[in-house]
Image (cartoon, rainbow, N blue to C red; front, side):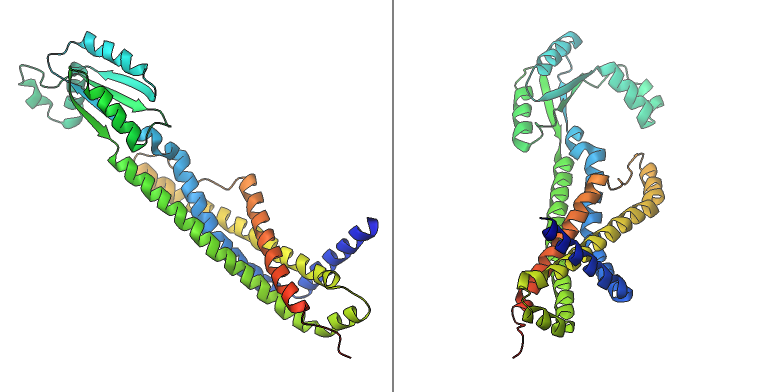
Length: 305
């Protein structure tokens, strides 16, 4: 076992040494890989930021119940208690007619005109907010039928259209990110595979001699596999730096834009877990590209008689 690990350590150091002796070529290859990994990582982090701020928009769904004007507030409170006990209901808030009129007077700017009214035209209302797991269209329709069945209810309004659109946009963005990540991952594998192919043919004579003295394809392939892992890992590390730097540069403009809309939205920074996952993905893509290229091209190289 000690000899096995020693050979692997030797191959690893050999691969690192060859990369260090060609810094310009190594840097260019790593930069290409980093750019390919940065794009889907940035979009995935953006989607994660939006979902974390909005809790995936589940808490933005409201169901507003308007009661008939002759309904007593005590009856509204009783119905609100019944609604709180229903499965899928997160919170229920009763809005008395007098408070609704006061709020409307404050927000509308028609305070003087409203003073001329002899009677409050607004009915009692109730704001019902479903739980996070009960915001599907079927769940909301079921809740609407339940509330509409009360004889005291005049109108039930489900404010979910825009939420469903936003969720659809998020789902579309997630699919686009996954698709682009897959395509760019294939590109990374191709870049690393082509780089390994060129290195194999530049060392053809050395490989022939190694095979001539008994070196197997696995033995000859091992340094190239470590080279691919180095390329992928270094590219992923640079991609993590680029994602963090881009987010840091955009923090202030995004904060100013969010404040102009009365929001506290901020871009999330990549966590150590996400960075580790990115490094693992980069190294894995490098290993796959190197293995496919080395296995194919080394099999074609045999010692000449």
